[in-house]
Image (cartoon, rainbow, N blue to C red; front, side, top):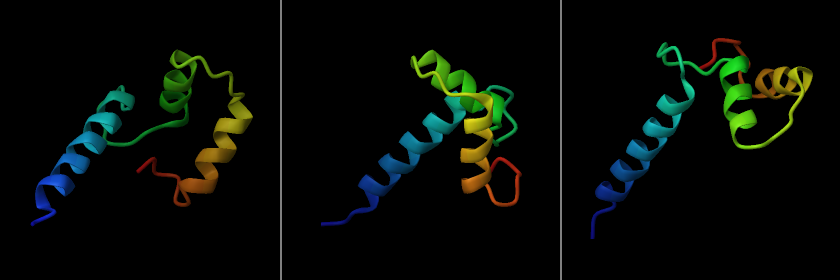
Length: 64
């Protein structure tokens, strides 16, 4: 049994999730875009916390 359909499904799901966060469509997720999504989900994360999280994960600061 091949795992290709499952991989495609996961890739499509990830792509849709990223596109829903990427408000300006540049293919990257900015601190403000992430903050907006978290706020819409009911999370109260400070700008400093968001910046720290993005800095920890996005080592070249390009949002990708």
